[in-house]
Image (cartoon, rainbow, N blue to C red; front, side, top):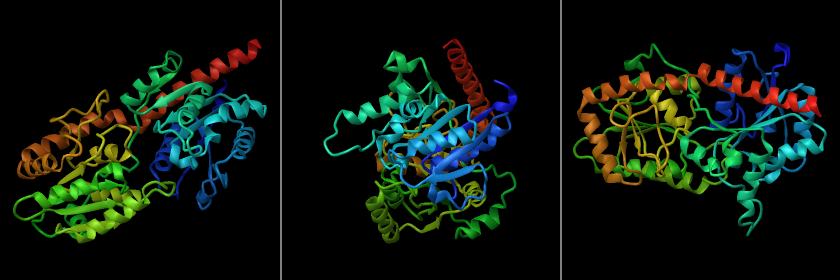
Length: 395
């Protein structure tokens, strides 16, 4: 493979200006890959049509069976050496077409190798009473891909139960979807968020979805004795491809409005503004209902923001390494508002502990730098393309 032919076609159900974590992740990865010698094009939904980047191909109206032909056309027109699927079930409309994409590309005569990043292992909806076929759909995508990328230890273990899949699976962490802030004006930034002089501010960052546990955070803050800190919800919208959390989102918005806790809700903020908002907070709290995971872009952004972070223990078998409980993050049991309240109270009182968490998190999260992530992707692409060319040459 010559240096001039290093081209990858991303297939993503969302991409900026659409609001969504996978789209933001993909945009950052595209930029980082360019620095290590890989040019990328992005095949995505028509909703991203306002993106002025000529690398963005907003061709897909519906992620149904017709999408495979568009992927084949995009791979041909971009002269892609590898197709990289950024897989999150909900982002593809819960339709199984993307799960069969490697097989459909071969049928269309495009024998380009496919790499898949599983941002989650949720099964697509398919149809009522599909049952085991839903798990089969994800397995079909995994088996058809030359390499699989996961973002956390629990997903690596899940795919590793199959020796065939385990051999082609690599763990590459995600990075922060927000830029680093090095010169935030703390006083001006706090005032813009409605934080008064002497008031303590607890932050939440991300979409208001059921798994984020915002209802537990409100309950915990309402349990705190004395003067309650301000809750600053940075973001607090829904991703544009999220069809599952509409009811919860409406209910939690009503809960925020009715709470006795003083609240600032920013709505969607551009990345620079979101970074600045997180940097001025006394504490960021992410009470994931099913445990914290490195698959969460909001967690990575929080620990890289410069503010100390309180979150929940990971699920059994998962790991937050290189983050360490009590050193770079503070952990409490998931789903427990009382434990959450005690953790918040402890950290707000102990400024030295907050500073220790802040400093250790900054050192630990160098592993999540986009340059390191891009280099690992580039190495994987080179291996995949090299193996594909060796097989093609021998055929």
